[in-house]
Image 1 (cartoon, helix red, strand yellow):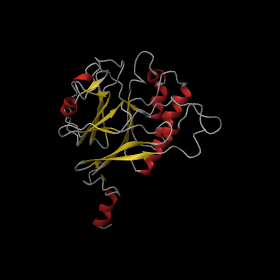
Image 2 (cartoon, rainbow, N blue to C red):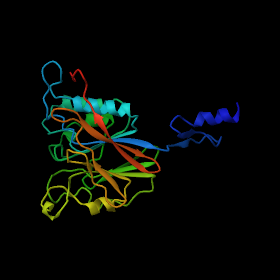
Image 3 (cartoon, rainbow, N blue to C red):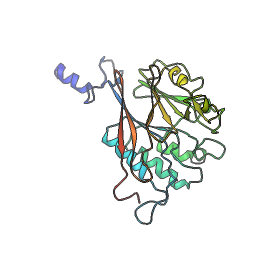
Image 4 (cartoon, helix red, strand yellow):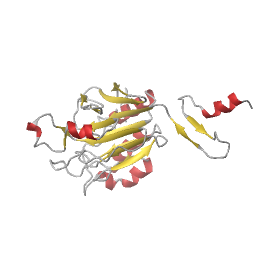
Length: 275
């Protein structure tokens, strides 16, 4: 076998490198030159009941649209920054179906609880924990914050779960120092304080807190329209809702490479409904 043929075994189509380059049997970690993340929030499954015949009893069109966008844009990670579900009264089968649809494309799905699906004593996340674990959803559920490392140890994602939507809950307060991974993403669900008049708002987020994360990207949720919340050197966005009432919405497509690039892509539900 020629040296060129050997090299071709280790370089994939996305310019990542893997395999045994040393000849000593040790796997060399895959190194990606870029990672694509689809960032959505405020999906609110359970807000819309399906119509007879064309839609499930609890309409699943938004998550079908998100899953389709994941495939269309060749996404590596899906981030849901809160309010995947509209309330905790959903039947277990609707929760299970939602999680199955989101994970069907086979990429990591990271979720933080929001103010509509808070992680409290009546949390649907706790009630449906077996479905969360079975589908492989990566739930950031610690109230003090938790993180996970993915994409061949090149990306760290941190977020703080919400158990009560009130002014004392600060999604980004005392976020941990930037880790030594190549890319750092912080997820937060709350209200961006634009002036002193916002001081009374629940789950407040300030520009200073965004900047102090020192993250490559802060994935926000709670506002339903795409909004640039970047500050200092930190890129931050509310992505907008995936589907309007009625109509289609948007999500944010973030490309992590030598720089962070944000695009807004449409989310379209299935043409023939979700039944």
